[in-house]
Image (cartoon, rainbow, N blue to C red):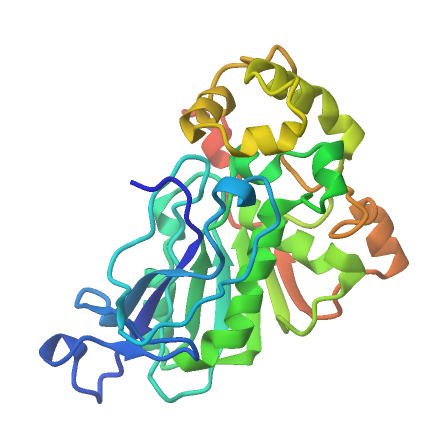
Length: 332
């Protein structure tokens, strides 16, 4: 399996008045650059479009680099019938798109929380929208996680490669803005939506670029997290980066970052997933102040009014955090 892909997973809601896709040709959608063929899911009465890429694969020179937009078009239809690779350091998130072709539907772009609980899957949410006869387009994003998406250093800052996990998310939102009409969604009705770590990530989108969001979303739903977090910077990450290049034999390379980019991914994965193999404590995997995507601490940006002026629904979910509490406690 290829360990590095960035994609969306899309599912199309079948209106009960329509002939079900399972009884005819595969469902298809036509973004401006080509045609995707999906598959019909009988359990949820939805047409799925799985593993649709939104950026170039972050391999080779694009590893530990800001995401780059797709530069391709194709004439022959492509299958979108399998989930993207569950890969080292990446989310296995699904992106479900519920729609009736031809509608101008509201869009929910969802990021899951950190526990990988199956209840994060959007199929149930889309199904609820069907039952209430208020269909939405629901999309979930696969982006770089762990150190693949959060590593930082002075070398990376110099080439604009800070906050690359959050830049992946922003690239996905840009792709949706440009292409969601091909899936019967409205680019003017997009809500970013997340829970726990997903809410924190989308909180970063609210304060990124001093609040400039280019109309990529009109509202946000943040469950059990907010943008407030303590950010570090290149100086805070440098000891970890220096230890990493020393461990991997890149310390004496002319371009240490380029050396890391071309190492076997399994070499880096073993380090990232090890128990303190570098004998250096890594900073918290969060946003960093890089002078571009993030210009100051979240508290400062919020106080200055440098945040996206969009409708916001936020709060803590019921029983949030009880999974970490001691079990068997009684109030008797």
